[in-house]
Length: 219
Image (tube, rainbow, N blue to C red; front, side, top):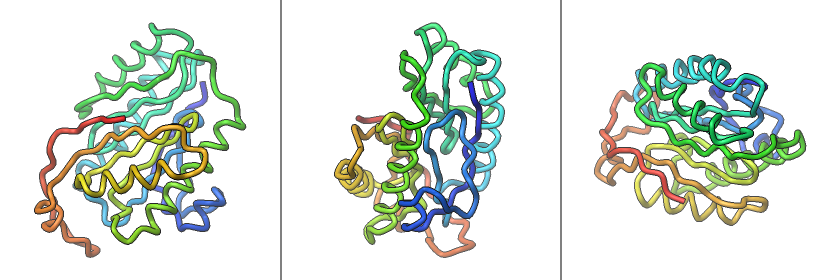
């Protein structure tokens, strides 16, 4: 299994479509296309640090649990972990989840590992392109705050993570479903209210943060 870790990725629309330019190249476990647009991140600084640590420690735990027997991607957003990729059997799928759940600061795991052969390099490259298209589309829409979203793509399935209002969640889902190559959209959001959103200052340097309701996953 190849392991890479997801870090900060700032993508302009053209760069996202090309899939070749970023302010900081993403580091991902396995080959899934992942990325975070971090401008004015709605997470607290503590949560962002924890997410980086969770991905690092989770990578180590997954090496121990799965080794070279599968292709596993780990993404953490506000201490909620998403596992995507492929493993050869249900036992390894459960072993991967159990290993990551024990990592410090993890408050939940969404295990969407598929029991099937590993994807090809061509399939993963296509996922990277789809991720770029999704991020460019979100960036283009003036009703959305792109820094609130993290995008992960695996086998044409797009996972949307973030702290967003119901309005933002629905709009982002609608836009993503209309992008060529997207097979399905899985939403893993923390829903905040419109009042919470108004209390979040979008200006650089703001320390304002609003509490979110528990994470929810919807397909």
